[in-house]
Image (cartoon, rainbow, N blue to C red):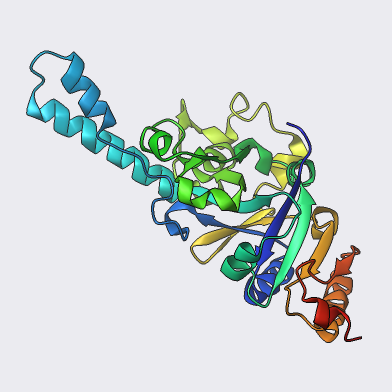
Length: 268
């Protein structure tokens, strides 16, 4: 994947949480502001059956719909997201929607992946989102990679964390215990062969539950390349943000928004 700049708009409260958590908070797909997140036309399979199987039974059609709906709901419940804006240029619409009285943090796609502690990467995916109404309805296999066209201005780069996969590999929350013979999967050497000893040792230390979501440990001093304040921010607010970042050993440029009114820039 080519290295690209990404940014994240955080309102004042979410910025506070970021510094307090010392990591990224990920919310389940079902709890995103887009209520159709991860949804698709779950009747797609039954319609294919009806078109290709002579006289399918009503029970078969009903079972196909139930299976697809259950899979959709499970994916929305068990996949956790961190959503970024692809690019570092500022958008007033994004400030208004997500960054009220807050900040914009700038990073890049490689750093977001490379600073993720081991073994979290074994359950992580990083991808650009496709915006297409027709494709979204048919996104049975990859429902979290497609959104409706009305969200295209968000230009999302998405970090997806699969909690069930992580649980199987590490035993975190023991959500779905898979046995290899009589041995739980996370204690089976053949299952965990791709994980380092260091990763296995810290697998429960780099992740924690917070409310309905998860916090994944991150070295914020490496992840955050730049911080910009909201367009209406004062110089006093900027100095306060600088102070708080220094307390967290985050040494990066801190500046006013490029969308700050010219008249405000002249008031020094």
